[in-house]
View: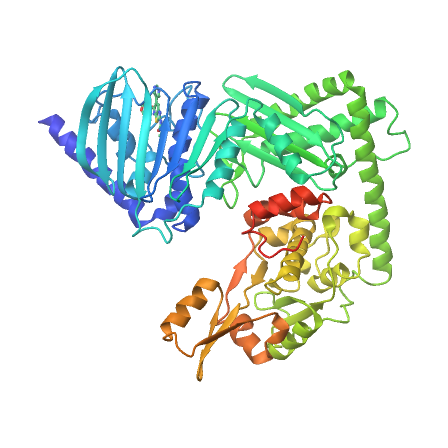
Length: 636
Ligand code: 28F
């Protein structure tokens, strides 16, 4: 009697829980866009990764099936099959109760967890159907659900000598805007997870096309391999051959660091907490940076690289050309910040700081040639910073950066309030002219860009300050760069890159994004940088005119207009549109489409940037062929 009552209450709670997930999916998986869709896979794979972290699983297979569903199989221990205190089998509880599983409150079970750490029940709630097969203690059990409801009871399917969990699910098309998984996005994530969990083999297979595609991701070297990989895709020269690796353990917490310098001028530091990419950094990152600066300065002074009279190297000097991965695992990780991707646990700052001060100084003592190469790189960075400061002051003396002087080519707007002002950076003079004719001069400013933009990946700050294309951009935007950056001086709320949809246009777009990413990152972080989306085609039949922004859209419009006597002529450039067309399609806030550039776009682009901007032609060609969708039409 009592038991039944309890069972009913549990049942009601379960259904309410899963209903809440279906009502507000964004709360649990971020969004219902393609990103949210990919999250479903991460949530399931994360549970297998948890098993791997517990030392109980060595292989995970992820398959994109022809019917649009996804299967994930691991060779872990499987879920304990006993009846849970709720009266239901534990596997059913894992798939139906919000927040069930070892992630929450389990002792000694080091958590991984997706961004939201909500697990299998959320995926179940958001799946048209979900099936699992759980093998453990000599038996296999299966169960099937639909939108979180049990549709096939927990059944024993026979004996086995294997253990592990198999899950197959079909994302609910009534919930997601898009149910087409992007293989490359999943591949990136699976590769990252394989790097972060040394030795785990992740097999990713796409069976949707004619020919199956498969990648096996398995790195005995873990984050050391990760750093090698990051440097290899930059196609740069290395400052020292071996990746430096350090690790420490403190109770159940671990901290690991891998680092290697290259000859570029930019830094790539990726930080993770419980396998989650902490894009906003946090305590572990702070501990790393502080310790790195201290160790390099101390070594430099001890061995005479830095003299009495010299200033200390600044943090940024010690990170020029550095590629590093910092990965910590801990219990009760606290994620803070706007996107909950900043680690708040201060004990991790101490742990990483202690690891680097001890182990890196030891490494330097034992490898003086490497230490010397790194010291020379950081001293060169420091001299360049000094030169940049002088160049900046020279520009400032000429009044170039004080905000009072605006570039001559700028057609400014009347408004000053940044919640309404927009700056269009327009490729080419003729397009600039059209844009000037098209704009609403009350709040839209135009800055035409002539010729190629400086490649900041290959040049230090001093060059940036004295560059004839970048200086007008810096002046117009008003908030300065680098150390001088001051958001309060921003002159436009939206900075919109408007380039042709062709070879030169893509190139200019990438160069400008590189510039913003490296020198005005905050503008991207705070959502001020946009891409204008000019149409690719005009389709017309008699007097009807329609614009198309992709080949598919063009074909759809042609079909809609009835096929016959319909013409479509591709725009060769923005300059070809008259002001009225440009206004209608690309600049009128009520009709245009703008693409917001996010820091994740920029991070994805980072690989592309590095490659496009490096000098080695052959790998660039290979890479661009493989990544055509990010850099369509690029001439190499
Ligand atoms: C394809 C997705 O989800 N694998 C999983 C395990 C293993 C354990 C577990 C999972 C225990 C008490 C719930 C086994 N033995 N793959 C997966 N593998 N869940 S999910 O435990 C779940 C919790 O309540 C497991 C000992 N401890 C944990």
